[in-house]
Image (cartoon, rainbow, N blue to C red):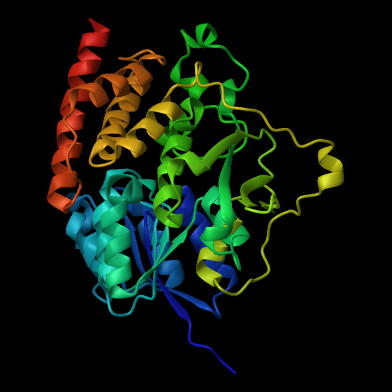
Length: 389
């Protein structure tokens, strides 16, 4: 019996998640159809992918690129521009699955649009949950949307939790590779330069997320995501450093059993599972050949050297707009570090200053979230200037 193809709107097409998604779509072209593509500025990639997959509509965040894309694709393809275009594609009638691989807070509106339209949202954009987790999950519940995690850690938890109710869960554990500075002490990181922070030993990622992985801030965002995705208190979410990155998520049940999802460190699997769920399709990754790993190691987080993780826990426990403020401040701080306007250890300092200065309040509307994000960025910019003076 033939099943209808699952129709995909891919937002953030040129990034690592987008390219993995297109690889899956190409392999399973009998089951998946790409009906919309979106990028910010990578128009050459957009045009090439749109032609290859015969996509009927595309969008670019940079409106100045629209005419160039339209000329390259011709009148048969609908071309849109601006942030609103991402929301429109996410809500379009001929879309079943929205893959949100947009980087940063710019992905929030598209996630809300997908949820409000009752789509399956394959979510790789962390900020959607960090900034507005309560809003997004409420919108999804209201409109019958499904939110599927694409991060390897949350996909691992999602898989390990199948058949287990949360009242039988004592802990959820996500792992961290430890990044390029695993085992280092704080004084050894005083003179870190961007090239060192961008040298991740396991995962190929974008610039901001790679720096965030080196500080363990990225893991802090994932703790906040875990809270919203699985509705479990912060004190029952833990982070273990696991350099081999073979175990991605662990569920501990109330009888002491531990169920781990294990796979080779390749984002192709969690991306594909978000598209195939609840089915499992053959995946083109190397097996996790455990005998040849020799050993699997686990360590506690060194919170003194990597304080950003603790700041994320603090923001989550405070609730309200504090996670939003934390994320906005980090985007500014990391950008300043990459421009060599802020020392590496100054990233955490800026976050701490912003969390201490901003007044907490409910994150009960999109406007409240966006205003908190704007205010946090302004405070962070001021903190960067003070740090540099």
